[in-house]
Image 1 (tube, rainbow over the protein chains, first blue to last red):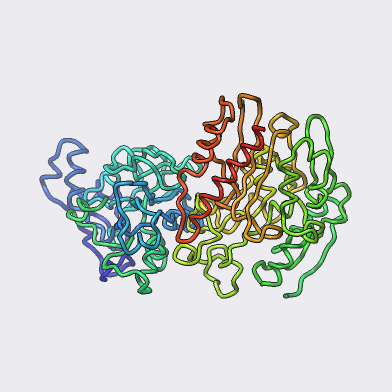
Image 2 (cartoon, one colour):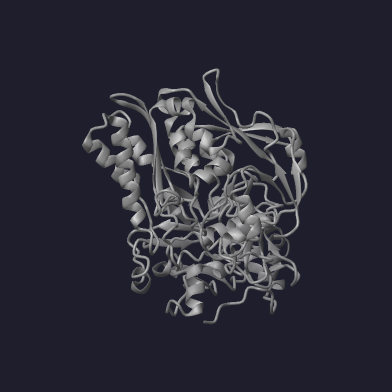
Length: 250
Length: 323
């Protein structure tokens, strides 16, 4: 399987969005340099919103997004727990950025169901790394950033002022019942951590050697890689965050 | 076993001071700690023995509370006339732990704070188990006979404590001493699941000591029972257990139904508790409550038997209290 790389490699077209190639792209830089870069149409826009939208459409896509195959998920919560644990270990919010939803209509693949018949009906879901990231566009500080190399949309929690604009703009939700203790949830996938007073979302474990910890530690992924479970997809895997993938991703 | 320093605390404050060095561990009865040290599962540079601290083993009644020192031996807890009368579930749970020899050594504090008994954690070859700061749970695709049917999260080891189940059912309070003084934590909040921290079983910090448990004298505590099912009946850890406490009668005013051996912490059967509240415990209500107690269980490959086991224990416990 060819997983997209999310560790830095060839620079993307960051300069076109107004940032030096090694600097994260932020709204402030979009406003300062991006408008000039994308031409007269955006400059002539009368409102910030319209101008920013034009800028947003020029932003690089993320080279990776975590996608799940619910027919392989046994609801073990390893992704949620490892997400929390790793982010807390590097000083970021311990809120899980990936959540496993209880989705009774989803059936576990026969090969796994024969082994774990009671552990069917789960769907892991996280930030979809939108092609048009309104969260980045509307962040009033430089807290919501785009990695110029990978296109990863992430939050600098130290700069977050918890205004909640990103949450309002986020187009995807966790709604329903969590696998974790059957708790109800109704939340955007940019979510608020009241303990740290910051907003948080999947940042593809930026800075972590080996990439997203959920993908690495998913025990079903481990079983597939070891040959114990046969599958041509992984329970959790990285794919390029194209507009087509955005439509397919749960 | 690696070399370590043995120290003997003369007071709780002294114990907290002695625990200030890295990898210092509390030694109570030693029935779990010494095994963990021998197996190399717990790095230990100093043990802080609590046995010489006066009064830490008392079992007494004071201002509407039953107070049991953390160093009270399990045998004494099991035989305490006060507990048998006022909080029978705790006495029964202590009596159900292991063997007479171990109950003569083991303490109440040690029993509630013990490490998990997961066979993968205890296996020297499984260094990548979560409980050993690893990254994998072998129970998910391995033999899961001992493991959780509720609330597993990355790690599926279960809380092995019998007395913890009883104390949770009794709404006990845990008194914890640390560098900043004392804090009191409800039994409900004392146990830590892997969703919070898979390396710990309780909220106890490395430099804290559980000194006492307190149980409010009440109808709830008096009408309580603990039952346990184990593979080898006389000595084993629980495959499933239940602590039930009921206030009121014949109509139930308040109920605590807590399952042990089936989850990473003592597990409140909330649906069953809510269902029996306001009802008389007749056979139909008991059967329905027992079914509700295991609703939502998600067994792994080889532990579905725990559903029937727990359901049967709840039915027996409620029947006993209804009599």
